[in-house]
Length: 377
Image: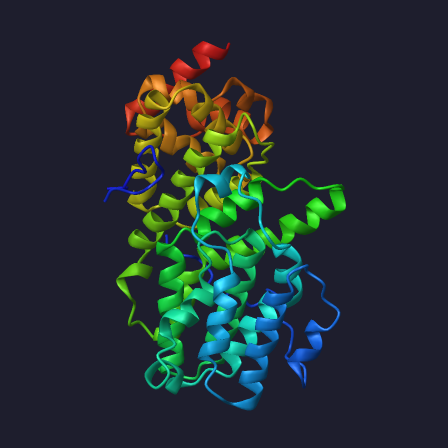
C-alpha cells in the first residue's frame, strides 16, 4: 500500500510504452578542450564555490586524486530540505540558478566523463560523488542537470561496469532523498516576468519529468533485464507518488503566504498516471488523498483541486476514474471541484465519457459521479 506522509512531511514507514523516450532530449554540452574556460565569464556572487569548482576540474584535468576538491564543492551545495527552505525564510547564500545554468551541468558531465573505478576503491569517493548528484534541497534546474548528466553517462556505458552500477545507485538515491520533492516545490514557487520565460521553463521541466517517468525502462535496457527492485513499475510508481504526496502537504502549508503555480506538480502526476495507469499504487495514492481531504481541511483540498484542474488531457479520464472508484462520496465531492466543469477535457469526461460512453462494473464510480453532479448542477 502507498505509504502516507505524516504531518511533519516525513514518510512512516502499463510500463512506459516507449523505451526510447529520451533520445530526443538535449544532452549536456560537449566538453570543451579545457572545461575551465566555461567558468571564466560566470559571476554568481560565490567566489569560494566557483574556486572550488575550478579546483575540482583542474584535478580532473591533472588526473590526481579529486577527493579534497570534490569535498570543497559539496560543502557549498544546498543542504537538507527544511521548513525554512520550503517557505523561503531561509534565503540562499548564492544564486543557485546562475551556478546551475552555467556550471553545475558541465561539472557533473566532466566528472562522469572522467569517472574511474579507483575513485571508489582507492580514494573512497562513493559518498562524495553521490552528494554531487543528489542535492537534498536542490532546485528544479539542478534536478534537470543531474538527470541529464546521468542519462548521458549511462548512454556512454558499454555493458556492465562499475560506472554503470554507480549511476544506478545515484538514481536510487535521488528517489529516496528529498531532491525530487524539493525540485517540484522550487518549480511551483517560480514567478516569471514574461510568458516567453515561463514557456521556456515549462519545456525544460517537461523534459525533466520525461526523464523521471521513463527512467525504469532506460535502466532495464542498460541492465539487460537484471532489474533492480527499486525500478520495477510497482515500486517505482510508489516512490514517485510519495514525492507527489509530500509536495501537496508542503505546498498546502505555504499556500496562503507564497504565490504558487501547481502546473509543474500537475505535469508530473499526469505523466505518471499516463505511463503507469494500470499500477495499483495509483489507487493507493488516491486512497491517501481520500483520507487527507477529510483530515487536513480546506486548504489542502484547494491545493489538490488546483493541481487536478491543470492535469494534462491524456490523463484526465484515468484520474477521474481513480477518484470516483477509490474515494468516499464526501472526498470525491471535495476533490472534484465544480470548476472542473469549466475545463473542456474534464467536462467531457465527467458529463459524457464516463456516464454515457463507458461500461463500469464498479457501481461506486457512478454513485460518486451522480453525487458530484448533483452538487454542482
